[in-house]
Image 1 (cartoon, rainbow over the protein chains, first blue to last red):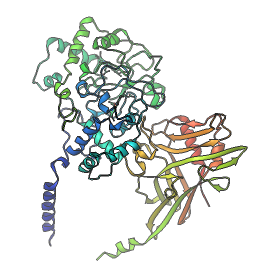
Image 2: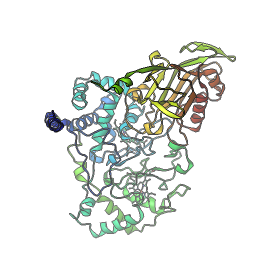
Image 3: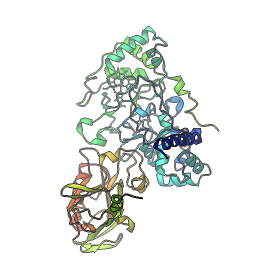
Image 4: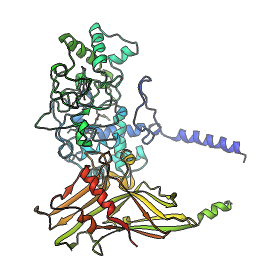
Length: 340
Length: 218
């Protein structure tokens, strides 16, 4: 057989094989707005498929991951509230002697290089190990979670559908959960529409945006509204928690009191605010930046001893932050509790 | 038909690298009490990662193990050996490897095989592998149960704990890495410090002591 014939047969073979791949196992392209930076998540090591995303979604909403079968990821990360826990200032603590923290809103996870307020977790894939194993959160351990899933009457078939193996591994479990979280993309707020020229800011929002770009965007960087870095924004340490943030991980004094800059997308719904949930309204947050800065060595130079905001500035900036609410994201049926 | 040079490559020699740990001159048995310097010491768990294993000849790598890492677990006899196949004609004069997991692998997400987090060598509340774990009891420890626990790891500078091990060897077909527990325990004042469970400078210092307590058994 000549070479060309072999190549043609090979291609025909590939095409017919790809016809045989069920729709739910085809590798999906990760779609995001063109103007955005490239995601940092390594999609090559964990290519998205619908079957894996669906499996991750079922797991995310399933209390089977917890010891008493009562708590799911969604207990603390609710889709309607930007995947955070609303009524509780403090979720339960993570890790030995780290203290108690407010739940985080999960949005645009594919762009995040560090996870948790102090960046204790370095890859989205392994993040779920933390809540599953934490005594105060889900109190389980990964070995027995896998056993429970393996003994369950639905999961082995779902893992087989997604990963081609009825034997459940931690890798497949973690990758499925990560895939679902990767689909939490919020890119259709009023702000996004204005940027695309489909809508217009009110005068007040426009003033707030101008102020924000000037004073806030160095950390809450567009379009993700986070620079992905650890910063000290001048919160006074709570002596009962004594949470030193990033310092607890790196033990470097220059990291003392620094926390991961949260995205402000959907911030309207992610109250209470800050790592310990100390503020319940955006207005309190504005007062903090203006008058409440607790100056220490590691406070960012962008904040210094405070960002002077007049009463009008505060109202304007809050109005602008409300344009970051993305109803299509919050009420996206693909992200909510999976109904059969 | 295969070209002859491919056939020639088929001829292999087997190299067996084994890992042992001794107290005095005894290969340790987990859970056995040993009399040691006026104390009674027993080791209940001893596990560590060996990764990035290489054989070198005159500084050039002649063999690179492509397994990501092997977990040496003293409760699992089969895990205490690494078998390599290298071309029959290959010579080597040095063996090198990492004791533990390097930074790059520590940030690579959910891994499988010996790096599966179900192996009990992964911190869950803070990402990262435990490179070396030893647990046991000593009568020298004043606390009620006399337990010591060292979980050494850390992938972020300045708490980077992975150690590189390099030894000269003559193209031997059996290489034995010996962990000298006498020497290791002599570097730790157990009564003062009976537990290290997270990345820290102390963990780095102890990791260096572990590396210095390993030698090739002649």
